[in-house]
Length: 395
Image (cartoon, rainbow, N blue to C red; front, side, top):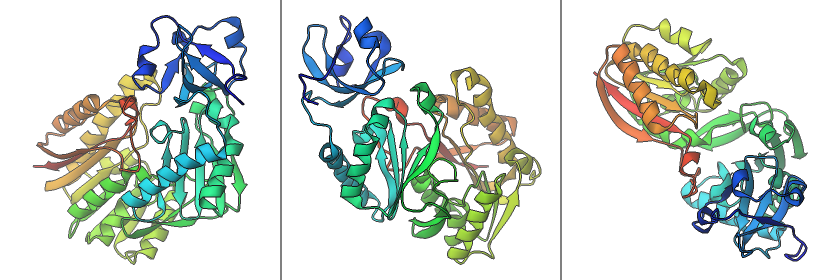
């Protein structure tokens, strides 16, 4: 659709400064929501205009969402077709190939890669795509065409089951756009082999965001005993065993996740080193009150999913550390992470500190880290850096 045929969305007086400064989001209260604008279909491509009428760029628009407009490009006349999306895909592929070196990574990380609301994880010749905005939902056929042209994948899974889709008025579902997604696929991370369930697993089937943290923690595990709670498919525990841990215990409440971790242990020839325990992480930690592990890993799912849960959820990290710290041998290491985007780094660090105090343990923070390098952050969206992790040595 040419610029002349595209509808316009007009900013209110004084509300153009953030967009001019490079912010990719426009909130509904910053837009002049007249009857014509409110009537635009969700996901419409529109020209964003300053109060005086100047075209500032091309956006996807959803009049029913708090984030009403998301900037695709500052060129209001751009043709948003497979070539347009393909150029962004090609740039993302080139970056990840340079950073990671093997085709197993977060390929597209939403706004930071110029595709707002889109997540794509790559598993060799299989892709898992999450589309979380109405604008990119409308462009999904074009996105699939671009993915085919750039990568010619064997399998594409549309894992559109995230709760955030409901904020955009979208249904949640999982479908296979190409190929066969039954069973599991193998992936390579940190020179180790793992398995992922692309359609039935959590999120996209794997958590690439912890790649760098897994490598660091595994480097601390050589010759030691390791407890990995919330182990999921063994990314931390199996790698620790491969890097020389004397013994590893993986704890998770999901049997399918433990089965995947057990398969990974076999693939990496550490099946004799890794044990698996099905159960609740808090219960498992309460049962381990002796200082018997040189490394304890706590990588839980999000404790805080909405603002109303912030206080109680944040306290969950305090409890987690209180229960985990007694299991750490003197001079050993505790790794604890939070993927709750509503819990900011200072709040997370404070809950960890309180948990250590409750457990009557002291120590030092060795590393404060976040998501792996294939999860870039848009400079104007620092809040999208959701993952926080602390590695501590305890006295």
